[in-house]
Figure (tube, one colour):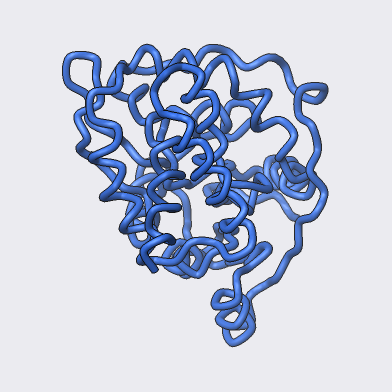
Length: 265
């Protein structure tokens, strides 16, 4: 890649940068912390398996959002923040695709910023981005009152919402979107991919594979997870206001909601 100024590479997170769902991965730590019960952990394990096979469509993501509101209201911000900080490397370290890491390095070498764009909560996506050396993250933001999650979502980074956040960041940072890249596995991320001049379908689901072929988009298959601990320095504690920390709650809740939605199909 030649050096490019004023541009960025935008990466979806789940099944694009990491091999599994970041949101489903935290159900067991939340169980140990007393935030969810044993049945919820089992449901999330099943959801992870189904997600790996089928992905998540628009309807299930909408149900996930709605279920999240009811499930997490009242959870304390500080406890969730501590759980994420303590378990991040253990859970996410083994899932990172080597091919994604290589692209991070290549885009940085070409002068581009690397941005992770995910429907998972800021508290989860932020530390993952720091661990991987991303320059920015765009993620779901939750609402907090008196140190607890209210159940309201301030911004849902999904579908067209991802494209909106990308446009805003591009305006702030001076990115030329025609010179930018975007990577995703899901057909629900078409708005994100269509926004840039260089869309790439990574491990695409059936619908995205078909659309990418019709549009002549690049296709990539990532298959080799690599442990990051030996490659990168230890992750610092995530910065930011308490309101941002509550977004981590979305991790376990999104996984449970997605499973619940599939059960009703």
